[in-house]
Length: 566
Image (cartoon, rainbow, N blue to C red; front, side, top):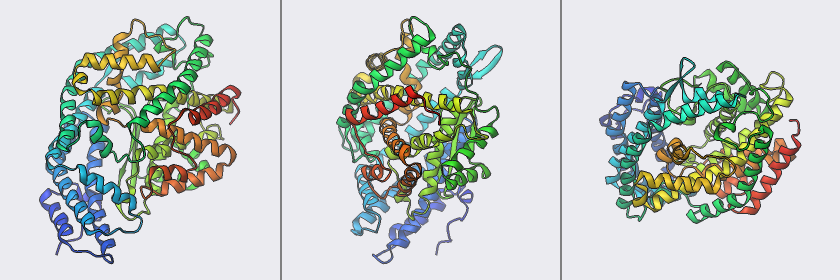
């Protein structure tokens, strides 16, 4: 008789595979029926939650401090000794459930996912997947070590970002070139990393009997509702609707700045000469303000965020040695989210925390679902949760005790709408680049070919900014988007979800309370229904064509032009 699994996940952090394996073995061997399957699934869930939370806590440790050798060793040890064995055992459990022919209530979509996961599983891929995670950690170490000397101080590149809002164009250019020079110093290191990643990913697909890594990744990401051709359709819609709109924004900015051409260092400064938005000076102020906003959107959402603050589930401030970017992960056994970001005092930090807060609320809202497989949410809708929250929160940026005066809140909101319009063309570059890489692996293995393809796509979609004399900086832009290296094909989600989130916002313009209720209902569904149904539950549609995109852009451009007070 096995002892009960630990109640506290921290107790599980030191368990060896020899201690874990008997629990998997017992589940694999235990008979179950239609009347007992709920208990079997509950026990599987608890075990899987403990293993997954352990992995996530180790990942958090190596991102909050990329220089922590002990944490990196523990992470690597988990990948070597626990991860492949757990994956093998999970595969056996999936096969056991599928072979039973039983279909538990609320399990239609999870069963569909399990069938596809079982289909592409290969034992020989486990060491490759482990090595891929280690190479991804190497990328974080490369980026996390990038610092520059600015006016006598050593700064990380995120810490240098506020200079991009300086009204002295020469200062902005000097800072931009300094950061670019530091990034280019790692050009060879990232190229070398890709020399290892691309053959590894090609082998993953080959082992699974698939002709390309794109085919493998599509199945690995459980994409049922759309295909690569739909992505190409969306790229074209962006080219027809968003690229002209973005060009109009760039041209308006150029004229307001009074410059002959718009350069990369002209994109963040206020075009009307107003001082940069300064929403906060201390991290506590950022947390206080965002908490107040969430309480205004919905009191329960505010309580969720306050729980995270009280339980130390936020790591927000940028520092040397911290991995780049921002994320929200889930400590699934503890039923808690964790938010990681790199705040440096900008309005973008407010948007990022609102965004990651949406992901965190997804975790809280799905806690009532009994089985871990039901919580596996498609990324295309997970990003609706985050981007939708940014927009639902926007009316409260200027409330009493908030971040801004009403005029500054309107400025922040319209700036956000402008950034969304400009984002779609960039998203198309990133996604189209990834399709090319894995459709043409022999060409993509050559650094010069990658740089040339990125530049070609950049010139197609990113019109309105002058990159003359900055050809190397432009060509290596793909190296500075972590998703491309670490989570290939995870970027189209942002573009599709942004369109879904804007539909939620459009609903909120007519009925705020109703839009928030629909938003929360959709989040609570987790992964129990398909992607299109999740969009529908939130009051939106999953679309790829130019007409719906143009409708939303027209709405946004009108809001930007009229600048209504929030």
